[in-house]
Amino acid sequence: MKIAQKVVKLKDGRSATLKSASPDEADLVLQHLKISHKESYRNLNQGSAHWDNVSVEDESKFLADLESGKNKFMIMAWVDGKIVGGLGLFSQTAEFVRHNASLGMSIQNAYCNTGLGTHLMNTALETAKQIGLRRIDLTVRTYNTAGIALYEKVGFQRIGLLKEIALIDGQYVDEYSYQLLLKD
Image (cartoon, rainbow, N blue to C red; front, side, top):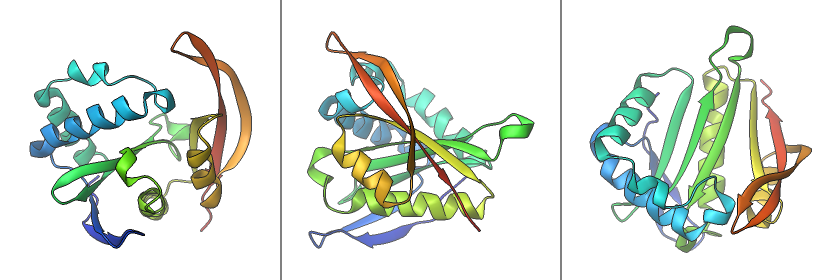
């Protein structure tokens, strides 16, 4: 699904444009993913090296698939012509659970604590309601206090603890599981 362009004001006075990335912008999406995953790999599910193995052609196909989908989307945040953040929401496809979606996001360090995460999250939740999603889930590392604060601020509720779910830098780390039930 394609997300229409929306301009938001960040706390530092800069403007950010939120919108879907088109397939011909795959190289810019990959640049963002490499930067954000290098900076914050401890909070994400793979390091930046993963994105070295994704071709622009493959990312372009992925973005085209998102555009044609009904219950999945990515919102990218653009500042000064560069992608600096993104949020993906991907619904389940099986008949009885297609009202559920999983959420993931990444923001480059220079744009943390600017309100960008809140803008991305609010836009995603508004869109999720419009397309009929009912439940959104996510996981977050227990030490990611900024992420936890954002998710709880927009209404996500902690529903569990996943022990030793990731192995990062030779140590097992835990994650919290969160969900949000969207109300009409």
